[in-house]
Image 1 (cartoon, rainbow, N blue to C red):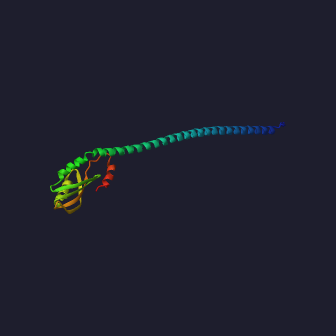
Image 2: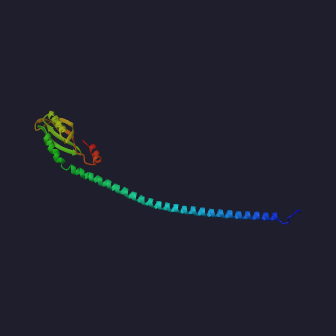
Image 3: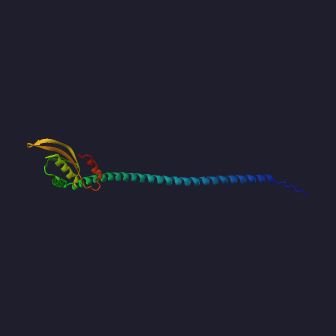
Length: 197
């Protein structure tokens, strides 16, 4: 015997599929909204954290810039104080130089030579004097060259003049003073060396 089902089962199956589709679509929309909300919340919190880190770094950089400017100012003051210290050390070291120079000059002066004037400029000394002969000026130059204080004697001029009714040679002689180096004064010594006569 043939059975015929007169219930609208196709219609009900369509309704069930439509309900499932709508439920699935609503679930997908809710899942998407949840993912978007969580993602935007996480990204927003990371952006806020990064902004606060950037603000902190800007404040620290500004603070370090102030400290760097202070360090640069202190370095300038230190250099200025070191330059003053070198000048004072140079003056202290050369305080007895005049006495030493004249003592050594007396030792190295040959007979028949006398000085009219002595002028010092920096490390250089210029002697103006009279001698009985040119050989005595040469002897003076050899003595000065062998001295532990003087170096590089250089005759600038010699000429015959009359002195107290006698013919003598008037000479101009330049010489350098050999100074012991002062600690850290190499830079200060260089300009003085350029001004030698």
